[in-house]
Amino acid sequence: MVFRATVLGRAASERAIAARQVIDRLVEANRMGPVETKSLGPAMMIAVAGQDVFGIVPADVDTLAGETLASTTSRAAANLHTALAEVAEARHLGGLADEVLQVLVATVAFAILCWILLKGRLRLADRLSGAASRRLQASKVADHEFVRASKIMEFLQRIVNVVVWLLVLFAAYTWLTFSLRRFPYTRYWGESLREFLLARLVVIGHAFIDALPGLFMVLVIVLITRFATRLVALFFGAIQEGRIAIGWIFPETAAPTRKLVVLGLWLFGAAMAYPYVPGSDSEAFKGISLLTGLMLSLGSSGLVGQIMGGFTITYSRALRLGDFVSVGDVQGTVTQMGTLSIHVMTTRNEDVTIPNQVVVSQIVTNYSREVENGVFVGTDVTIGYDVAWRQVEALLLMAAERTPGIRRQPPPAVRQSTLDQAVVKYTLLFCLDEPKTRVVTLATVHQNILDAFNEYGVQITSPNYEADPTERKVVPPDKWFPAPAKPTGDDR
Image 1 (cartoon, one colour):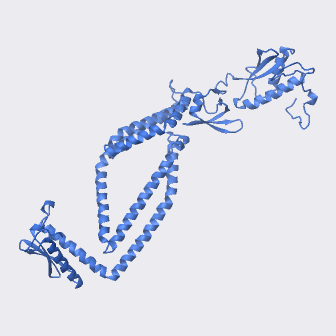
Image 2 (tube, helix red, strand yellow):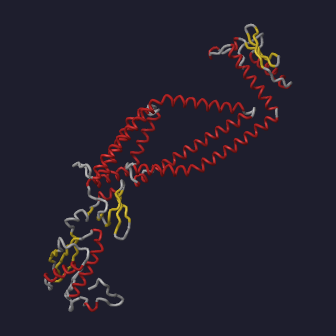
Image 3 (cartoon, helix red, strand yellow):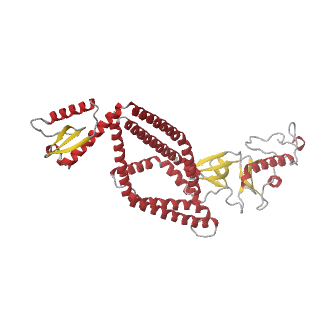
């Protein structure tokens, strides 16, 4: 109660001191109630256990705040009743013990709840991230490599951590409020914390109710966008399976085109839903959106370059899964074509990851694209001018005929590539049944060339030639298997 008026020559401060002294005497006499109000002319009097404590005159009322004499008197009487009741409670040791027990029980429950939340957050984060990864890959919007590189899973785990810690803080706030309200000495603080929380919850509740129309529109836009993406998935799925033929979309480009269209639909849906998001028109929301866009544009330049490189590879149709290719110094079979890179399995069973930008900037040779017509593989030998070219041609064709994995149609051929100063360079051209066996087949051809030329006593002068030796440098057949070499079933 705030005294503002001077009554019978007593200032407001003197009235307050007198009222406090009366209340102290009542407490010392253990007279805690009842608290009553009575009219005294134009003023009101508050009494405790039949003894007048203080009076309230119209000049004490704060009319600018909308108060009246009746409301001011009622609030003062209620406050005095609460204060006296708490003093009585504080003097009752049995009630204080009950309050301590309640606080201990609440503390144990709070500790158990925090332990459960903090221990279960890792498991919950793993489950949510795993479920989100499976849903993303099942929706065909992004592959595993893109999900890993974009760190979506780490972002979901951080969200779970933030939510768990918010729950822990809310539990701590509730426990503190409950504990403070148990004791008369701290009840004011506890009630203040509770009133603050309730006021914030009321504000949040009103804001949520006001945002319901906008959230409903966001939900409608999401449902329409999802329906459209499913129609797009069915359409491009039919193209990929060959049930629908369109000249400008090929089956091998249907899947990435679907991803692009689906991404465009979701971006368009997000743009349409943005004005209906609660708080989207606030300056803080606009500032955060601008900052996020700036960070993404500066930090994702390399990522965007790899994605654009993947689109270039896909829509140029230069590579397909299962093709045997040469990218720079790497030769192998394409096992995966991702958003950011491709995987090539070499003949040594090495899984080589090549970024899409590197593939685009390199010369790529595809040995599998013209398998039906035949892709010629060549190997060179140099022979001296004293050997008839017809014999060399026959020996090279003999070596090709002895080699498994070489196609008979189109037939192998021999070309005189160059006529150097001391030697003639011959090139044996042949087609493979399987481009994947390129390295193994070349090794076998080289073995058969050595055997054929040694068998007929023709010297191979590769790689360098300086002068004719007195004797031909050949290995006769009877010396083809010196120890520890042993003949096998494939040797002739």
